[in-house]
Length: 422
Image (cartoon, rainbow, N blue to C red; front, side):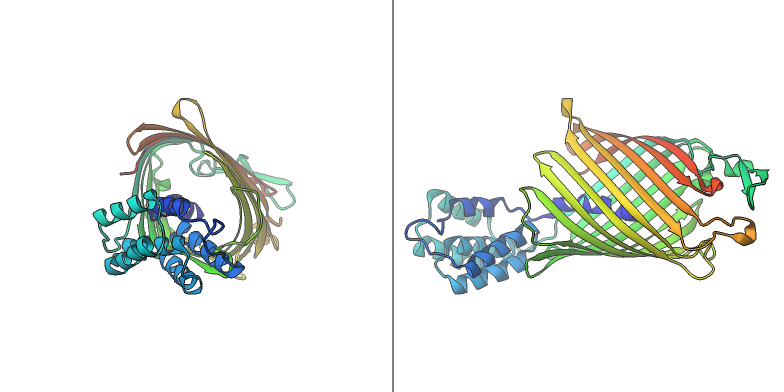
């Protein structure tokens, strides 16, 4: 489910209300430090920065409130009047926007660029807010060397390891080709930046249809602030099917917090906390309640983007779950960069560990306390082939190491897919 949420949020930028006009207005509006312009105090400066930050995050209602408070405290702030007029026009409040445009024209001495911006906005008209949406379709072919996560070993050791039994063929790795199709959809729900998202994905193997899978997830995300702290809350739910039957259902609540730290330009620190409930429909005593706390540091320089995060995990089950509760860690690294000939490359690495609280299944002669470490290396090449279309070549290597031999497995996947974003 985390992958589904991440994929949905990757399209969030497509829903942001265009702020180019506001950026132009702020660049051309009188500077508070110029002769004759008002001198803003710390409170007024903070209000203006709060409004600009709200605009950048798509929270137009919050931006309007901050600008109104600023105008009440400093009615000579031309930039605040113009920004608020543009916001009200974007919300369809034509009369209020026109009143504010007239105030800018008569009370201040706007530049030619500002007058042209106001004139252009009037010509286009102030239309009621309509929700933006974004759609992405994907279809592809792939090859999986270990569809069933078959064990790396061919024998089962019992007790102290002195007894070994051969594993049945069903528990050994099976390879197959597959076809994948998916849909991702985002839609703005409010003028203040709340969005709804949904993702549907289906994978059909060429021969191993008992491992065919599909998933459906949806949810909402809202940006908000607590003082100078920026926050985003996400609620999501969905289900996964395997072999034509519902395999699991999930629900997740997540909060992403951006503290007001002084960091280098284009560098961002987020702290993410989440709670996930997993209900296994066809397995007994495997349900999970997982807590996650993970800081993430990211940096962007032009088209180059990198991020790193390290988190703590805690997973609680019922008293009958094999191995009981477990605790773990998650390391995630990501690098994305443009390459030659229009290609974009992405390289990702994750390492997740779990250690159970008690022996896994002594009654089944598996007395070890499960200690698991899963590493995933992923590389993607993307190439645009036309308007709103691209080809993606992805390879993925998985290495799962455990102290219980039958749970260890390796895998390699290769996938070529086509993405269309109309």
